[in-house]
Amino acid sequence: MSDPVSTGTTPNPSESDPPAGGSAATVAPSAEDTPEGLSGAALAEVAPEILAGSLGEYFGAWSRRIRNGESGMLPVIAGLVIIVIFFQLERSAFLTSQNLVNLFVQASIFIVFGAAEIFVLLLSEIDLSIGYGAAVGAFVIAELIAPPVSLPWWLGILCGLAVMSLLGFVQGTLITRLGLPSFVVTLGGYLGFQGLLLEVANADKTAVGGVINIDPNSPIYKLVNNNMSVTLGWIILVVVVVVYAGATLARSRQRRAKGLTTPPTGVTLLGVGLVAVGGIVLMLICSTNRGLALTKVEGVPYVIPLVLIVLLAYTWLLGRTRLGRYIYAIGANPEAARRAGIKVNRIKTIGFVLASFTAGIAGLIYASTQGSMSVDINGGQYVLYAVAAAVVGGTSLFGGRGKIMNALLGGIVIAAVFNGLGLMGVSAAVEYIATAIVLIAAVTLDSLVRRRATAH
Image (cartoon, rainbow, N blue to C red):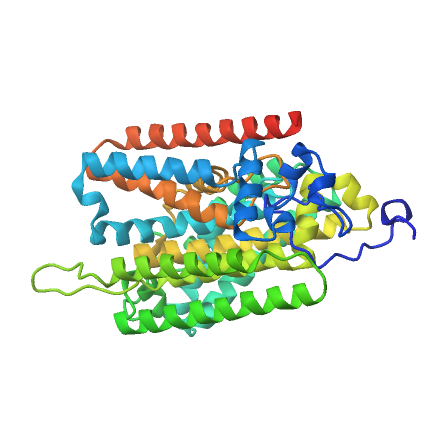
């Protein structure tokens, strides 16, 4: 059989998932390989589900990966626990249901911006324009659903996201076709989209002072400011857990029947159990009355399931599709990917389109949070938060390693820092300094992990 790298033919992606570390650079052993035939370092590089035949063996393989420097999300989780304990000791209101729900809502925009940035970071690129790009998309949505246009809210959202996708396509094309650095192109987008936002606001005579208000009765306004009923929330949770459990177990059976690697049943059930426990905890927090004496406020804000849907959809995209495997391959080694027949320029352009599209969703959340859209949005700050959420969550700045769920952890960490410092009443300067320290610590950890992994 000829080697696809030498012939330049398009590779036929296997049905196995990307490695647990989220990188296509790690190659799993073939079916003929056995744990006994691998060295300790090689064992540590292999995803635990490939070697494990039971739950105990899975945790053993996972432990070897940690000792070898592949700690995954553990440092981030440990850091989040420390942050929560610190702020709870400083302000007892930190872990109240009212504050936690506020924290989740605050984190939603950081999470989605982080997910947008992850698409380009995985490709060893960067996008500095998504902050003001998101503002352009959100302004278009607000214009189209407001009088005199008064389009249906869903059509306005589609148009805004289409505009964002077009902006991402233009930038991606400039980067790939002309060979321009993504830093320079997206820096130009950072400035150009800011100017475009001002021009759009000036052209719209209904944007008084550069501000367009969103109707409080609009679903866009209710996205952040309204909650689903407690009963509906529990019903959705049960349906989601049942569907997830059924799909996961069915996929494991199919892979096992084909002779492909699959996690032990115990590991699969453990994952389903963790999803169920996480959902129950979230519902218990959100089902508590958070209103004042005469006002009852309870239920899950609509923005939370929206964010979870986005994360799950992108997790599937990166972990279960050919496009996702190609993104990891290009980020790990673009030249090898090109020689293997992957259309690198096309995949990179798609990556920038996905980043801009996702930033448009973040802009929608921003507009809903504010109840309006104006030209005074600090798009530059949101770019920094996007990179911070991705990197703090565990995505590598060097490409090829990371998961969409990194944005979830990173966004929650950043929101926790801002929320806790806000409860303490510190100045904005201290908030920025604290966020900078968290970001630098995350990048330092990323560099140390890569250095240790390379040494092995």
